[in-house]
Amino acid sequence: MKIPDNGKSKEEVLAALRDYRSADPDWSEGRIFGYVFHAEDDAVAAVEDAFRLYMWDNALDPSVFGSLLRLETEIVSMAAHHLRGDDEVVGNFSSGGTESVMLAVKTARDWARANKPGISRPQMILPITAHPAFHKAAHYFDVDAVTVPVDRKTLQVTPETVQDACTDDTILLVGSATCFAFGVSDPIPELGRIALDRGVLLHVDGCIGGFMLALYRKLGRPVPEYDFTVPGVTSISMDLHKYAFAAKGASVVLYKNKELRKHQIFTHSNWTGYTMINPTIQSTKSGGPMAGAWAALHYIGDDGYLDIARQLADITDQFIAGVDRIDDLHIMGKPEICLVAFGSDTIDVFELCDEMKVRGWHLGAQPGAMGVKESVHLTMLPFNAGQIDALLGDLGECVELVRGREPSPLVAQLAAMAQNLDPSKLDDATLQNVLGMVGAGGGKLPTRLAEINRIMNALPAPVVDAILTAFYNEWNRPEKE
Ligand SMILES: *Cc1c(COP(=O)(O)O)cnc(C)c1O
Image (cartoon, rainbow, N blue to C red; front, top):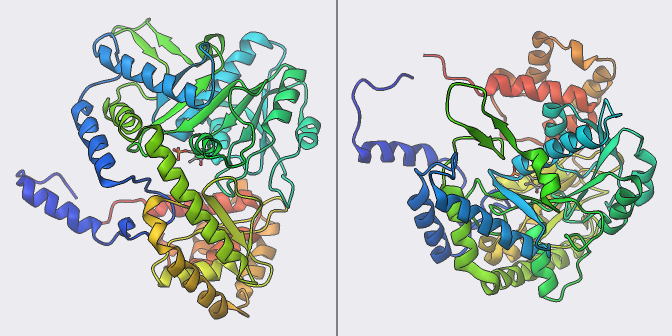
């Protein structure tokens, strides 16, 4: 494709985009669990108008657009209150959970460089349930990720496991509140004690759960301690584009005090252009996401958020009760908020996902790792509310459909073959060959994914990662003309 010789009308351009989009799932039907955090229409309209109002303003330089600094400090202040922080808490608005997490890891690294000069290879301890954003941070910032298992039943890391994994090079502990996969929190108070004992930092990943847990507490539901009131917690990430229903590109990373936050800030004056003060990874950035988030918090308000939380808690209870009635399925761990996953000891849950997809349901297949078995994840959202009975009905029927289905012999063959592969030596031809065997050759994704999920679950993780990279590199390429 090339830029058209002559510009088109706005109607033509938008008609083409609507046409592109028509094949994507219509999330408003409520059959997708996750991805689109969408509140009721009036709130959405307020967010959109606020976003549009600020969309061309540049948050690169708050000395020019002063109201953007005001919006950011007010959002951070509301977030800090929500997480029961004191007046010392500072933070920044970022583009999403990944950026917030990456900033927290970068800050920890530079804090350690300043305060623990003896450490040459800094380490952070990550439960297997920690979000991949931490591994991405490890990869980008050269901090070693030490992955530790979680308890197979509770799916929480145990304090002993973390304690045993600590070395003299440990700079940062990580706990989730809640983790994405199962909606359970790690024992933050115990991790805080270890952090204080060892003089290291503790980041709480509240990207998805941090906002909702505080609402659940206000509803009188039992929630664990996870916020700034816990001794030892030094930073928390919390996404606003998830359960605060802001438009995408909205998260915060908060620090216990500005002594810590100073290690996040990058400045550069020794060049020939403008003075650069970058607290976050992005430099030029739209004011839209920030204004949208500010608008969501003000429009919906605590009372509105509590109504949403109550509704989501109810439909989650309804779903859990329904799964409990299906003999072949069980809920993973004890979900603390409106994130749930179920597994099975008797049927293939990846086949189940494929059958549900045929019926229009988008559920999240999750591979297993380090003793935790594969599962299916649902992030509950307001638009799912009217769909839970239908969902449970189809689940029950699809369980019967897939009963007795055996994984294809290819899974065992590939798994055996992969045991002897050195992932760093996999050449492109071999990778393309493997992709062809699983029906994903030439950058085409098959509609049924059970076999691919099974294979990914059976192969060593570094081999899977090499295959995924090769697949993506093929998949995301301009069409040849
Ligand atoms: C979503 C999520 C992230 C990453 O956030 P993005 O906004 O997708 O970048 C990090 N941690 C947890 C627990 C999450 O659920």
